[in-house]
Length: 250
Image (cartoon, rainbow, N blue to C red; front, side, top):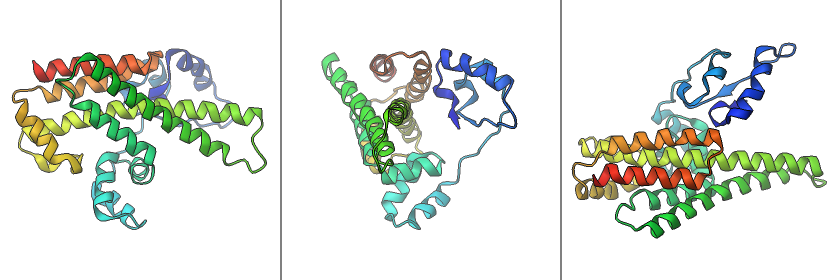
């Protein structure tokens, strides 16, 4: 399976010929968060199949059955956004939870100066790097007799992919945070996904009355497109956070 929304232009173009003329009975499964996030040339050569989000209560039951506590299961189910696999990762992976903490630290730095925002972005990217490093270590640990050079190269590629996926997830988490602020401002606090930060989110909404939280969320979702073109994640995050700051402060 390939995450089609993470392919840059060069990788997508290299895949086109294979998609047009697959060998034998080969079937490729391309995953993406939306059709809009995939290059049109790829979309035109594939058949779209929609997977609806799994209801939150079903995900909560799944996590409870695996021994996680009630609050932990509900938070992980909310952050997983309808994905059982992602919810399980939030419950089980410390690196992903640390990434979220870095996102929460950067997301509400509206009054901070440039240097403070830059440090928050550096911390966020460092957490994404750790997600990638953890994935690389996990792959290498699977070789009982020690990995050879080819295995090390493969592990490094998988680690880089995990890092890029973590950066994309950071952008999604930032968008989710601002979406939470938007629903809280609309009086629908029960829809907040960051269930352990309801009070803080409500306080920020009160502090910035009239802020365009929905517009800020859209900026973060659009920012992820830059990952397809090998734009450095630091640049993507710094520009996106500067733009969202204007949406909030006016």
